[in-house]
Image (cartoon, rainbow over all chains, first blue to last red; front, top):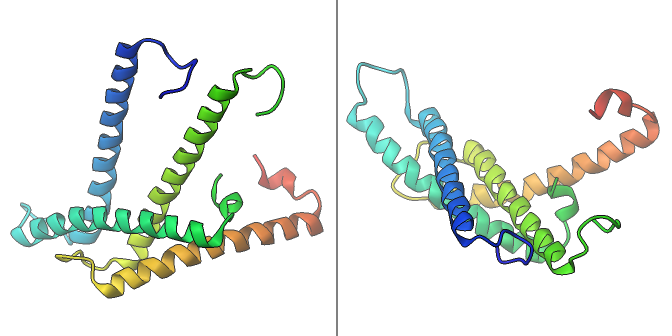
Length: 90
Length: 90
């Protein structure tokens, strides 16, 4: 938030930044829990067995890989397709 | 946001515009990651294999095609049906 006219209080600014980051992280945990539960959990048993846990490990890593892949691909596509943006954004 | 009465500071205006665009792009990446993960990922493994990556590539492109198609179709429908908008929008 470098723009003029935005809050002039650097302490408040940093507070906002830290809180926003916490929120984004929490949303990520929430989303990944849902996604990996869907992919890895068969019928819930009396405990998390090691196969399910191994799947969770892979799931978190592959989801991050996927997110990066999609980002790269989207940037690439945007460059070659030009202004598809009017359909995609809101 | 060109109307009078909104901020008179062009620098702030541009800052807002750029940040908004970044946010819309991030939301798009987020949505596409979720959608393509659902369609392309079987059981998460130790790495992204080439078949899954190929699926991601197709997924991104087809999702954009779909969005464009829906937009066109909706515009067409709106033109021929006239005021269907009373039921659809809002």
